[in-house]
Structure formats: C-alpha cells, structure tokens
Amino acid sequence: MERENFGSKVGAILAAAGSAVGLGNVWRFPIETGQNGGAAFIIIYVLCILALGLPIMISEFLIGRYTHANTAGAFRIVSNGSPWKWVGRMGVFTGWFILCYYVVVGAWTMHYTFLSVTNAFYEVPAREYETIFNGFVSNPWMPTLWLLVFIGVIHYVITRGVQSGIEKSAKLMMPTLFVITVFLAICSVSLPGASQGIEFLLRPDWSKVNSTVVLEAMGQAFYSLSLAMGCLCTYASYFDKKTPLAKSAVNVAVIDTLIAIMAGFIIFPSVFNIGMDPNEVGVGASLTFVSLPNVFQQALGDGSVLAVVFSTLFYFLLFVAALTSAISLHEVATAYVTEEFGMSRKRGATLVTVSILVLGTLCSLSFGPLSDVKLFDRNIFSIFDDLSGRILLPIGGMLISIFAGWVLDRKLYHDELSNGGDLKAPYFKLLVFSLRYIAPLAIGLVLLDQMGVFQFLALK
Ligand code: PFF
Image (tube, rainbow, N blue to C red; front, top):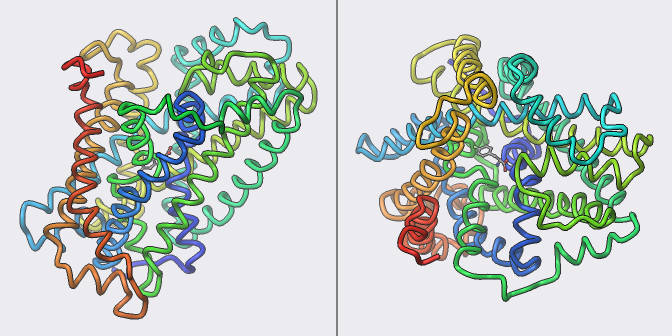
C-alpha cells in the first residue's frame, strides 16, 4: 500500500506542535510555574527540554523518519528483531491508553464552550461552580454525549488521511489556536491589577526550587512534548527525507513552551484582578472547570459580552488544543493496526475509535454511575491517567533514550540526523551524551518520584 507523507514542512511541524500543545499547557504548566518559582521554574523547565526533551524528541523523529513505519514497526526494524522492539509496542499502547481518558476531558471542553457561548455562567454565585461541574460530570448522559461528538470529530479527521486529514486540520487549527491565545493574553493583561499576575508568573524565586520542583519540571516537559507515546515517531514517519529533524524538534519545543507561558498570561492577570489567591485556584480540572469560569465572569463583567466572548474563546482554545493532541494519539494506534494487521485505513481507524469509545465511556462514567469501581482507591479515569502518566511514560522515555544512545547504530543516527550529510550536526556528540547518561538517569529519578518512592523513604 502507498504510504502518505506530509505535503509540506510547515504542515509537518504544525501537526507535531499540535500534538505537543494540549491540555497540559493550560491546566498544568502555568500553575506549576507560578507556585514553583516563576521564571526560575521556566529556566529549569527549558533546561529539561534542552537536556532530555530535545534529544528524545529528535530520536523519536529519527526512528520514525528512517523507517517510515508505525511506531511498533519502526522499532522492530531498528532493533533488528531484538527485544528492543517492545519499546515501540509499548509506545503504541501508552498512547492509546492516554487517549482513553484524554478524550473525556476533550468532551468537557466542548460542553464548557457551549455553556460559555450560551451565557450560562451569568449570575452564578462563586460557590456554585463546583456544583455545576460535579453535576455535569456525574450525569450519565451529558458527558457521554459530548464524548461521542469529540471522538466523532477525531474519527473524521483520521479517516481523511495524513494530508487531507491531519495536516490540513493542523494548518487550520494551530494558527487559530495561536491567534486566540495571543488575543486572550492581551485582554487579560490589560485588566486592572494584571501586573501582580504577571509578577506571580514570572518573578524568579530560586528559594522555591528544590529537587521536587526539578522532578516536576522534568515530568511536565515530558508530557507536554508528547514524548514516549509514539506520537512523534508516527508523525515523523510521514516526514520526507529533506525535513531537518533537529530544527523541527526545536520549533515544536519553542511553540509548545510559548503557548504554555502565554496560557499563564491568560490565567493569572484575571485571577489577580478579582483578588483571588492564586494558590487557591487548583490545578487540572478544578482549575479549568471550577475556578476559571468564575474568574472570567468576575474579571470581565458578569454576563457581559466581553465575558461571553472571552470565556467562549478560552474553552474553544482548550478544545482545539485537546483535539490536535487527541488526533495525534489516535493516529499512533491507527497507523499501528493498519500496518501491522494489514487493514484498510478506514477499518483500522474504526477499530481504534470503537475501542476508545468503549473505554472512554467507562472513564467518563467513573465520575458518575461507576464512581464506586475503584482500584487502589482510584476511579477508572485516574487509573488510566496515573498508570500512563506516572509509570508507562517515564519507563518508555527511559527505554527510548537508552536504545537511541547505546543500541542504535551511531553511523545510522548521524546519517539520518544530517539528512545523509546535507546538514551539519555539530551537536551530535552532546546529543548522544545526553541519551546515554543524562536522560536515563534523570528519567529514572522522575520515575521513582512518580511512583512515590521518595515520599515513602521520607526524602520529601
Ligand atoms: N502533550 C499534550 C499536552 O500537553 O496536553 C498531551 C499529550 C498528547 C501527551 C499526545 C502525549 C501525547 F502523545
């Protein structure tokens, strides 16, 4: 079967950036930054990206582009049939696993866009936002319905193929996302009292930086860049031989970090404008769906046109960010089943879609009718979230860096990185050094931390 490629370099970069820019940029990065030392945290985060994020991203790009195969196939080829082939399969599994819960939140962003555009937050008392959110997610029907729509959109894009589906949608959605982000940040920054918010986000406070903060920065860099889940490897398998791998990786990392910082400019000036304690806004779902709708209403004028527009654009932005990431995760699994089991793209995509529909619904219902189904005191959603983010992701990242640094043929690596000698790669030795030593060690620490080992040993 003829394998598609991305039609342009810009399309390829935007698609990969679409994978990276996701919920993590908005609902985690800004608050982590504000609470963990502002600019000091950003510097550490950028160092993590340079020291381990980029080397791993470049390696994933390289393996994908060299093999022009889905992630499992790619690792099978480069591992020459050794047990390292399992790293690819694991990436596919992790990506698919993440997708099962990621779509649930994607569905919530659609509902909140709808609530915003219909001015449903008008005259809602501050304490009611939590009740609204809990009422929504525990309802057996509404979230499931939105889930169906969200997955439907992903399915549509995926079945249209690499160029007319993924690339075209990325070329449309990523600039849209960027424009909305800039617009919202400018609005928020022009509010009275905004400067305190900017100060909270950016003022460097090195006294807050400790080993926990560094580990958090590393974990966030990993998740945010979509490493170790097959996404980058799969997308790179559609790059052509002329795509500069290192430059593309740098572009993706820059776009991802810029959007994450700008999300902070959207959130904190508004929070300070209404005199709220930024340490009380929460993180993740509680920040996004409980604190922020209230903050936006109050900061921009309850029920005002500005509040409606701002809030609608904000949730739409989240929706677009979640969608482009979810598409990349779906593609990992679709490319895998179509190529490994010789199915048509349509059939493969349908199989993946049905599987996430079933498991996504279970995750979604775990806030309502299935809330009693628990393992280690976690509901189904948290099991998917924790297992993938805390365990599978760091293990995958570590294995990829060890494989790329120690096992993969050096000459092959250099040839591919330099596009057969066309490009210079003066950073090659540094890259290999990181893949061999820095990345595995650092990720090993993240892994132990995520598994709670340090806490257990009372080191934290
Ligand atoms: N990078 C995305 C985010 O920051 O939300 C999440 C994500 C997407 C993780 C795709 C992993 C992935 F493969």
